[in-house]
Length: 554
Image 1 (cartoon, rainbow, N blue to C red):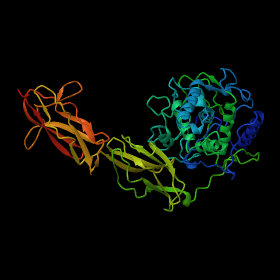
Image 2 (image 1 turned 45 degrees about the vertical axis):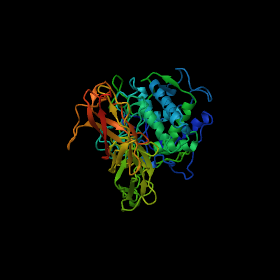
Image 3 (image 1 turned 90 degrees about the horizontal axis):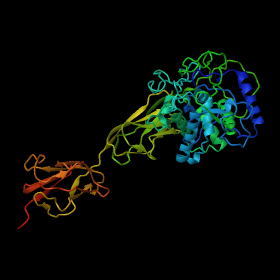
Image 4 (image 1 turned 120 degrees about the horizontal axis):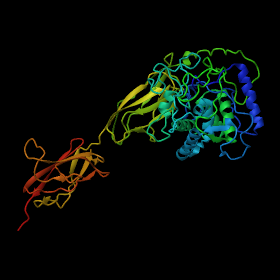
């Protein structure tokens, strides 16, 4: 959450107690709502399946608005949520922001219907993270007028996350900062970023892109957000604090009971505590208030659905440092061999990494993200370019099977400890072209034509590799001269290009699924004689075919 946002976590024990009482009052005044799921142990819950782990939350546990919704519901329970432009200011959502949430819901309903993502959950998180993109201060494309940046995550009152994007998203090449209306840290955006407005870019400061990315993030791990437990886990994976969960839940229930659209730029942004000024106001708007100091995240979240009126010191005790056996110190290659595959085939080698603690021993339950980078159409099994998995008891985790596409050459696969500042483990993968070690004609008909005519019979060949069909193999066809050093012939038979021009070399030919290639029509010029056509495959297989141009018999 950006430093300019007001009334955020944390304001001491009194605020926490008041918030807990307000949540209880809200639930009582607005009728029955979704029950907060409990982890049974009283602590913060953990995500399930392949969803992001607790130590890789989307926001880096950045601060957020802790203001709760009014105790008066915007509309009675059960009424339509498509209300006219009227009602309390707090229930209004700026037009572009509301459109982005609903578009994200529709998109995910098509791609992951089992998740059952409600747009009101995106609205609740957007309210808590950025006050609905600072009250909807976005341009016509949904991009904020100025970047929304959270505080520097330098370990001084916040988490310590060293730079992972060279400042590309947050402008800071030393430490990371949460970015945009949904407050993604750069390393999380690199994995989950989306193009929600179809402009060809993935911009965390665009509400359409950010809302769709948040939707995919919340749906990770085969979650069903119609279930209270899955919804709670999803929210906690966004910011791992039970106070955060209660705040988001409050707004979620509030928006489900009714909301309405307001013009962009007129939404309500929670006020500050001291009436300070926004260090980076939007152009054409008055400065937004901001608190004087940096808020601190809650080091010891209270229990879901609970809360206590007991007073605590205004300055929370510092969290003890993790034990060396629990501290991730290194991520390394766990014996992955050379990564080479022929186009269209699966790589025989699997990428494997090992996480180690400060004692040099294996560390389990570390979230690792594998990402394919570079100009390639290679993908992990299932068509994914990025996957997040967790190390096992031996500290290792293996990426899914990697399958080569049709693009040849080298690309890179990176493995990073998700949300951590450790260097990535990089692997170079090579895709080679499909090859053939033999090529031959499929028949032995004589190929003849009269001067100025076309050859009646087509040239058809079949390629194999180690005796098996060689499909998709590149073939070059060239009319060549005689001699020990054949060159392209400038007379005799020829092909025609797409514009009807004479050409005597054809490239970009490929065998079909049966390893067969049928050449385009061949034409004869006015010069009689016997000529040679050479076909050469990727892999070096060659066949030379005779073409005869002769006058027809009298």
